[in-house]
Length: 558
Image (cartoon, rainbow, N blue to C red; front, side, top):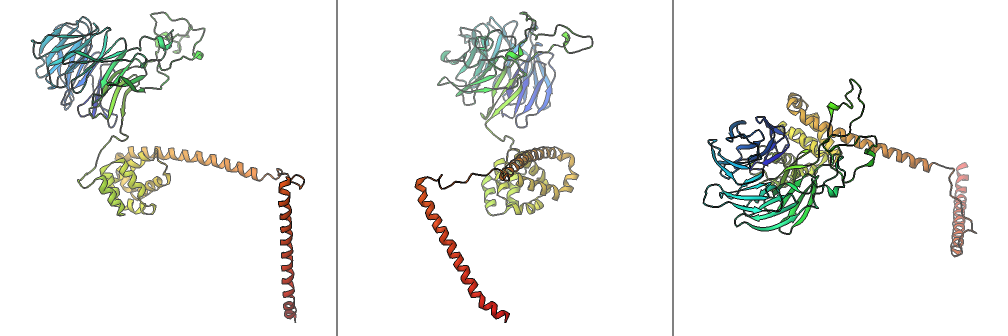
């Protein structure tokens, strides 16, 4: 994946790849539901329109394509008068004007999305463009970033204002507008993040991130990870929705989160721990280095190959060379809800969120079904109504509370009276919740009651419930294996303790009076005297009992 963009409502993510495909993902389920294959070369940038009904993409094939998110088709293709390769694309807040930057002629092309006509060509850069963005406030400002060490502010709708240049000491690699439009951040090749005021063109702050985004060594690197120059800069940046923090990533396994006002690093996210990806560790293992391997030349990026190959053997064949991918982050974006952010990395599309359960999918929800009303119903001991209301609200915490507070002896009656329409939702919740819950017996009781009491309904709707049953089977088997391990471990432990207690040949040596300490000798003497007195009392009592029973025995014999 080379680029990504959030939809205005934060429900979808569109990504573009170097294979020329564009995919749209659902953030709640993590599934891709549509793929566009119209581009003939790598996709360099994608963006949603402000209303979320159109997806725009730029590609190295020299086209800017617009895709309809209602009919899922390419309805507009925009090209330049002369063939060129586009590196970035942006759309204004009205959704009518489309701008794209190029890599070959260093120009910015502007089209009308309604007609597809080319409106203007902005020239002034002396290097390839890496990023551009319209002002999110609706003004006519367009900011472009280029490898010529400048970021230019254009006024698209009027030619009276001159073009203003923001000069830097190094080449620019990324650009991001703050959501309120009062600040723009630029990433440069020297590892700095520079924040500007786009209204008057003044410098606000600079963050040095060269030491924060350190990458690991590759198998082809001959220097230490501190001296690797490919990772000392950021290639993608993104503001949070409130504009207080900044995310930055590059050719490294880390993504850094900065507090802009205080210029401090808040957190570093490691995007992968997969050892098959190159550049993941700071130090290489000497066991992977072999003296017999041929040295690599400067223009050979492949790994050392065996010197000898056999006919018909694919292992060691020079035509089947494989390279491990290098860890990197190619795109970043924050959700408009400020609850999650996504990044396109070597491992794929990663979504980080503050919510444990994102899928809010109520079923037949009414105004009286609220968390407070569910808890009141539960306190009134109306367990059937409480579980139905919880399943309709579909809040994990509320359903969990109702499930745990339902008495064990009432579970069977509650499941028996439950309508079959709620059965799949109940089994889905049980399958999801028993993964990290210690209440094994309670969950198994709910599951056994549901399967035994509603077996005919499950058989009739088996194609619809097969996914739920497979999820349930997987987690039940996982719990079974876990309990089996615990039982086996305790069985061996108990047998070991029993064998120790049953060993009769191990006896503790008895202590003599000579071994007793002098200070406890008097106590031992007193204990012996008390023991003798008790023995005498027992003997006297037994003698008196015998004497009292003797006349009775004689009388009984007579």
